[in-house]
Image: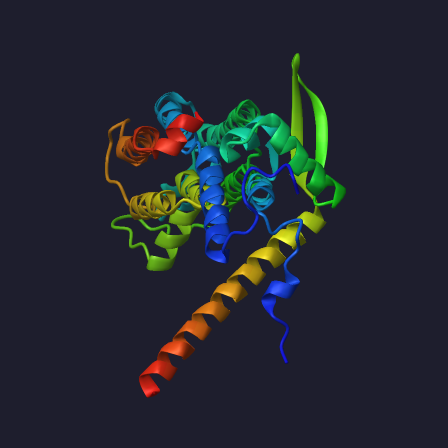
Length: 238
Length: 113
């Protein structure tokens, strides 16, 4: 070949190094981790007024009548329930649109589809599991101190929309081949699982705040961290 | 007698720029001409010639279009290109393995002698 500027006779080590280096450059150029974390933090924070001011806090669920005529119920806030489903779908649509737009600007394909599909599926599964658990409570419907088994804790924890967000982040870590995001996602899932299903004895209308503020703060910190601490190649790719 | 891995090397792919194009296109799924040019640090003419070689070998598919008023050329890896890239990497690894084995064999011979 007469048009080659690069000599073709190169050692296998050099050629493999070229492949590895280019692969790394493409992966870094495709990463936009800060954006999904920012959007997910936003929908978590927007859930606060829904939890606080939405009417009819218990619309779907099951009740048991106690001796004496009183009843004890489990249920879910239908507004919050609908909010998470709609918010998650809108969030993943926004994330997909952002990745596609940036991908066109940069002139490089995006691997975002598996993340968006997984995110929407997990949001739907989480909503279905939440509804099922409202009608089939795993904790006994008895007054007084409630004992929550490990299985119930885990199942309820996995069914929360915040855990669904975390599990989808693990898919994003796989898609972006980012060990840092994988570690972050595992920490996030561990945190939301730990606080996912707890018995809260409170009469405050803001009792849910830690449940939303802790994950939102984690997501915001993650977004800031991934946005600010980027390799030079990623900075120049923006 | 086993076939030497160098015999399996494809002349079209066994070249730094074209191997680089295939590697980028594989990782990116689809890649624009400008990104390839910047990443591989080539002139437009040079990159175009390499792409023509790969397109003739049916390893990439080239599509021209517009993004707004801006002309764009998109490069996508074909199944043949994916196979060629995979085979080339496998052959390169085999070559390295054989060289390393030969070197360690020489070392042992020297020690034994």
